[in-house]
Length: 302
View 1 (cartoon, rainbow, N blue to C red):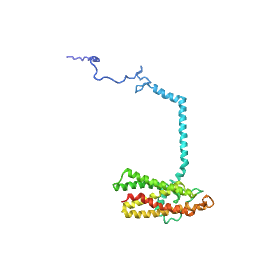
View 2 (cartoon, one colour):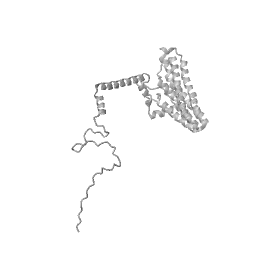
View 3 (cartoon, helix red, strand yellow):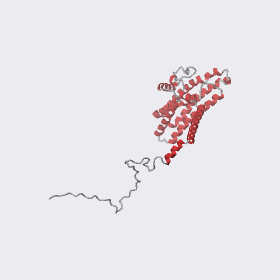
View 4 (cartoon, rainbow, N blue to C red):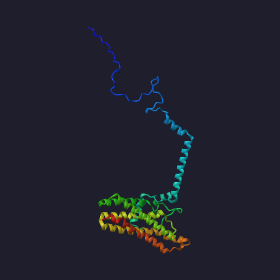
């Protein structure tokens, strides 16, 4: 018995019933007779080279727009130069870089000198062609790196001390930081006023005064650590040691800056200033340091 396979007829598209899901997509892009999409079609539905692109091209092609952009950039450059010029009038960037030209060897020697200055003999700042050597080449040179890092360390140590005593809060820590900074600014302003009234002509700049005033943060760190480790007795021992060391350091350092200017002022405008008053400024600056150290650290140790 022979079986013959008959080809099945393919069912045509069903057009009677509605579709289960309606096709809400956009129409397919037009194709040319070679099977490729027509150029100029964008996936987002907008043709390439439409109104948006035409506006951008017109913006860059418009000579007025280009002139306006060039004029705006020139104004921005001029404003930047004016700002830099005004800043350089009050703060010399090159001079500020001098106070941060330190290395690890200088930092270690300077910290040792601040803690134990009694055996140091030569306190004169060295010069090369009428220019003082950078701190990395002269331990007697002033720097702002140690005061800056010591200030940050003091704030962190104050936060730790307050946390140990269950008294930490952002407001209290911010008050400690602002108080320590304000006292340094007041001290520098008072020293500038005294030097101006007495017509003292010396090599001291405002950066030097901030450096000398900021060295107290090293003694404050030493004092707070003594109080945290050994209690109130350790605090007062560390306070006495750091205060005496800092006073000795400031007197010997400022002696080379302020008192040595008498020879330069003997024939100038500073001849009328009394040498004894200049000595009082030096001693008063040194004697003021223990008071500030105690004021800023006594509340951290209990």
